[in-house]
Amino acid sequence: MGYRVAVAGATGAVGREILTTLVERAFPADDVVALASERSAGVEVSFGEDDVLKVQDLSSFDFKGTDIVLSSPGAKVSAEQSPRAARAGAVVIDNTSQFRMDPDVPLIVPEVNPDDIAGYTRRHIIANPNCSTIQMVLALKPLHELARIRRVVVATYQSTSGAGKDAMDELFNQTRGIYVNEPIRPEQFTKQIAFNVIPQIDVFMEDGATKEEWKMVVETKKILDPSILVSATCVRVPVFIGHAEAVNLEFENPIDEDGARQALRNQPGVTVIDHRVDEGYVTPAECAGEDAVFVSRIRSDPTVENGLSLWVVADNLRKGAALNAVQIAEKLTSDYLN
Image 1 (cartoon, rainbow, N blue to C red):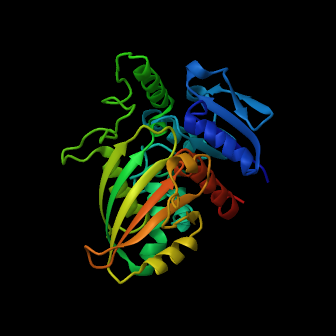
Image 2 (tube, one colour):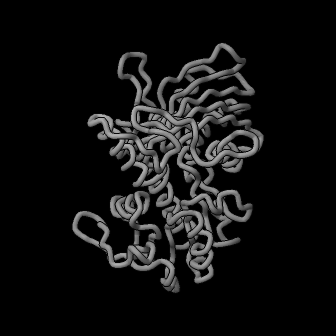
């Protein structure tokens, strides 16, 4: 059986990556529709090597007869359009932050909590987690099963693509401008991003954390285990694609490096590249375009009882967004909509 699929936000970086991923994974769709804002209506977007789709206006699109909506048009738009699509009978896989902490909406990483997909029937919406959360919980899951994680301290190094195409353009333009002595005028970021790092992603909250840091805390608890304590510091770095994370873990039970390494190797979606030599680890430049979450620098932390440190890297546009959404759709069609 083929499904009718709509991709909302099809002109954005994540939307385009979703279209590419649908083709690469041969998703069983008889019809794929590209949707975006009214000003993008009529624009053509690539669908595979040979096909193009003409973008239609999301706000006026009739979702009747649509089976699945892969949605990433921004939280405000999604707040209106995702429930509208759900009322029309579609199942919405929403990549924005709008529904992630809604208790009636499952928050899914298919390799971590696939059984939670069954909860989609409550609102016909499934939430895709934050990109930085996805790659972290994929690495945490097998370790939590092995020795039970008590506490996570994570510092992220997040690429500009996580803030969209305009943010990537700002990095490019600022970098070029510095070489020709042009003045730096931040627009997408609060400070200069070229040749700099910015310890702020999203807005500040009352407790001093940013909303991105809050997301990592609450989403990890919802997906993996509400008892896990998480402290996050999220940093924007001058990289185009690929998020990296330095993760420090404290466990309830003893764990050693070899056991952790083997558990991670056995985890679907994770690739371990961990050699204690020059180049024996993965960086964002090397993970761009790859589906896996890469784990390196696995080592014991002697400063706490049962401690471990990791380096976790992934393409935030693929596993951090588009691929995870398509994998949810695959699980949905194989187990619930067939």
